[in-house]
Length: 352
Image (cartoon, rainbow, N blue to C red; front, side, top):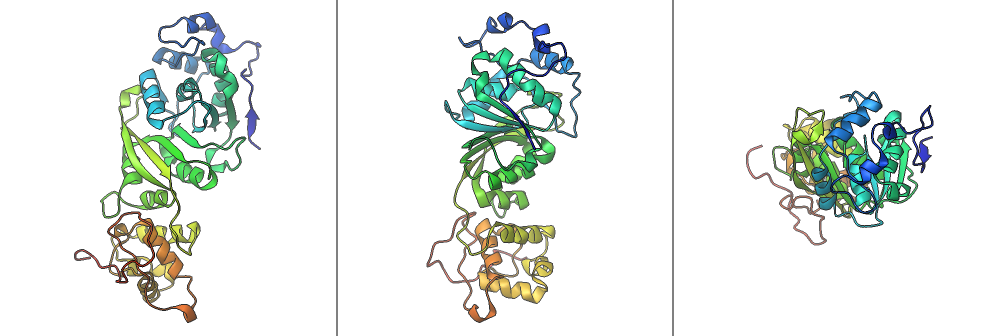
């Protein structure tokens, strides 16, 4: 079971928070740029001192790169459009840089941290740097991939996601937290490009199609390497996702995602060949594609999520009910198909 605590005191053998030993609360409150209630964001020096006190050595295994620039934190929170009293879930809060920014905006924050050392330290950091808002924080010590139930229903997610698990974590939360309406995540720039890529583009693939099942995705800005400690070897970017209805098809998420996985497992092959294993044979795949209104000579990179859902639905049609092919267009990426659309099978724009 996850450890859930609203406590603002981190365990310490001496009974005194380790951060009080290097930084007096009075000094925090009198620092330039503070709010009247004493809130201050973490600076480079703060992050390094916190890490030293915890004997923390950032590890690539957990994707630990900590934000050290208050200006960037405020920019992220501003871009996310966080509102006072909004419930925001944050995955991978680390030392608390973004957490403090969210609290500064007036949000109630549910922070999910897999590292038990960081999870225990976060309430004490908030109590020191944002004492008047410490009761707005709740910390769960848990692997984000296993999170299902939260203590409150978040309507927003704002997070600096670990690079190595960014897409799985994002898709997991979109699946299991239906209350999420708006998401802003910082990810590796290459991952951002894949999440927002439209059908037909070079970077369009599994992350693009699966994210489109839940939401529309747009790039919301670039983030330089220098605002992290340690400095990563890649650039970062912000991605905004706004939830929308899933495609109106008879197939569900699991069936549709199985088609997406199969189509991109051999992305240079036509759908007839790429879906042969999924359908049982190339001939069977061709018949399913025709029923779905999709040209079998297309490649998966040409289809939006609605087309993948239609293929999954066509595979479930009983033999007795199979009639004319369905109507779908590939010219409007990620669009949900209205009734009465054209009845032509999808045709490739050029040689396959």
